[in-house]
Image (cartoon, rainbow, N blue to C red):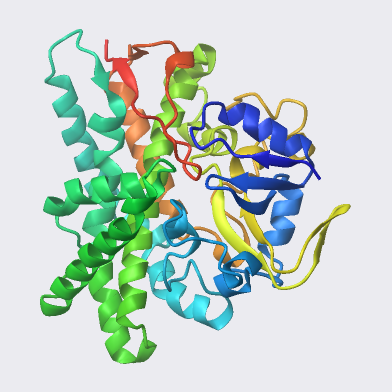
Length: 402
């Protein structure tokens, strides 16, 4: 099996994803830093493996970890070993840690956040409208970033004063370019910051999910302080990064497909179609780290060996022709059905999926209603990917608002 090295600079994600798919449903890959693992790259195989009890989240199953081959200053160590949370456990422990979060983020409860999301969106658009006419604007920094960060912070009870520091630390956390000597301190700083937030909520509880997690731990659900801190970090990280990329990628898709943009703005196509097709075609999460095989697992005509690590390559499987037909590589907001698994599958499907969809469903139509003449300020081919293996993220999104 030919090993495919994932590009730490993410210069050509589409080309890399195509190579992964061509290698078959199970590809042998090398992560930045020379770490070997396998990637599932086809839709059907991903559904199989994401529900296979022999593929677990316990890093102690990983042979390379047991042998001491994974250094603690590996730039992706925070994603491979982020501490005890619902992201790293299975079975009863996973259900225990996930239940409170899932209950807080049901579709019905998320819908109650709509008015607040609309208000935040309007405020962001008002700031954009106040800028000098003809000025180029970084739509990611000025619109796509503040909205999900403010929403998830309000939900979790995180003070806005912490946002600059969070942004700085998460930039290092996700990047493959963080110098190894800075990784341990970055991980420690994240732990210190989130511990501070949890301690503050323990002293003065509020109407937020962090306070609810603390209360549950005191009422018999037996969440440890480590589990609360790590769960908070997980939700903040995933709760804003995915939605930022979803909004940015949807804007790029519409700007590069003017006929479909026209259909959406005229009401011929619903915004829901744009969101779902963006999630499939240019998914916010390119690869998810990391699961481990407790025994040999057959995948098609290949085997995921016992003790090996597995990543889920959502960027590759989202354009799988076996699932989506010969037009899998095309953006088509009329696509139906569109049964992608961009938010995962099975017991570990992302509990924040409804919130991300709601935020994009509010932000995108409001953006285009306010600025229907919006245009990219540079050719799409000049948009730059950030060096992040897990997130399909751009450095910026320069636009002219019109």
